[in-house]
Image 1: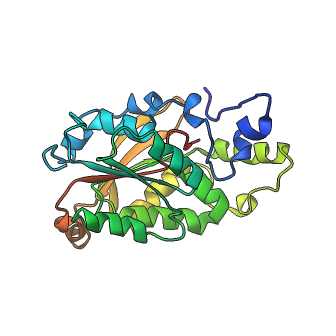
Image 2 (image 1 turned 60 degrees about the horizontal axis):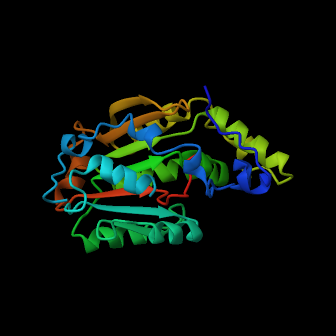
Length: 264
């Protein structure tokens, strides 16, 4: 079963995933279409989480249309972001739902002010659902163990529900190998990472022990052997749950938004 793409083309510097050390590939959805994930996520997920439609060309659009009934008439807001400004520009140009889906250039490892500004604009204190799909490895490789744990903590702090897809460790090895084949320097933290093996299990442990979250449901694994895990605030921690009582409008957030923004 394929877990990491092995692209070959006339210009390996462009088509090989090693050419995108932050995961910001140009043509990601040509080899991992949105259906690979959407087939595992029930279309009723938002209703199951308590999101009401009356209050509420890429993966972002596909997810929105998959989860939101009558998307053209819905008030549910989705915010997608990526650190690559070029990918954000392309996403904005091909976005068919401008009134419901917004994109911003953001490096979440640096700051989250823009996310809080978006929430304030919609009279929300937290995102009702955050989707972090195949992003963890790139943050981990470029920012180390502390960067990965900080990412999870930040997402948990601004979300009532978190849908997480973490790359397995074999993808780390493949990403490092591709980078070396291109004659580039290795990822700064690859050889010194302490968090290895079942990364999804490590992420779950951190969210449960340090972020007041609990695993609500596993939707199974994608064709690339990546688990889709849904987390929510732990009902046994009332002080944590108190954070969510100010949520007045449904909103979604997805890390890496654009049609060409990758999740390998």
